[in-house]
Length: 380
Image (cartoon, rainbow, N blue to C red; front, side, top):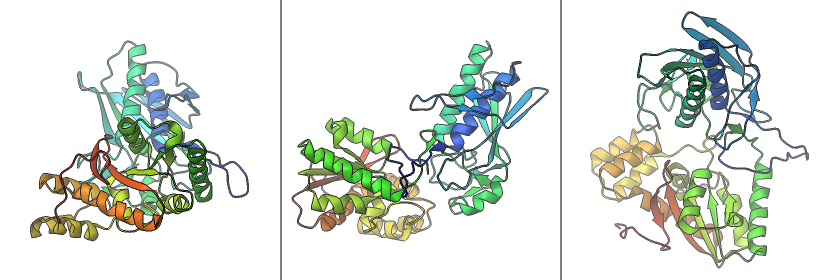
């Protein structure tokens, strides 16, 4: 599982779980090697790339090939000890010269899907290569082009062998990603998913904050929300709890080991699940209930046509976009409902709670709890 944070990766038998690399990291390495060969160099093997966090891993090439005006390289994905459907898959990058001034453009090769429905972070018709992997690939191939004294006008085609078959084991078809897998990753690193270890790390984080006498902690679902809350409140690192999907494990421990002030922060979809009363926010265990979100819009005064569109939406993001266009504060309402659920779980623990909904760019788009409140009161 690609996650936005560092966790304790000790397994249940005490063995350290081995991290791996995302499809985005593998595609970046393959693209960098293919670009080097396209400009006349030897395929670098192994090939090193720079990840968003500054790490410099090296990847061994499994495939190399070049022809007239193109070059191709492939890397076998190693997901470490994570049960990733793409572990062992061959991720290919075919790089060719583009038209002058075009910059770096992307295509879906065999095994990589195409976006066919709205509500995803990519426009309809685009190859399912997510924004962070695109940025990683663009940066890597541009650096190679500059070193060769050539313009970075390149067409990068990413493919994954057997990807169309592997995609049947994912949610891609339901999300409207047709023809294969998505190229994913926000850090480049796959952190093995160990529920017990992650929850234990949350508990230790609470213990550290209490021992330090910190009056305020923030439980965040990922790195983007953590950064947003850090900017907002200026909290020290010891006050940041990497909650991930484990809202229940976090809240129940805080009920027994309270801290005066708790901020809960996360994306619209994850906090929408908490607002429904779900304690596990992982997408594989609980999908976003679009009927429920449509009902929230109805309570906010949405027209019947808008409610129908929300029920037929592809993702929670699409519902959020529909609500924003109609001027309905659905993110505020989700924050309010998530806060109510959190307070129920905390029971009578002496904890002040506020909730903030964070968008993909790190902006605060919804909040509840009165701390630093900037939004007008919600309609009832």
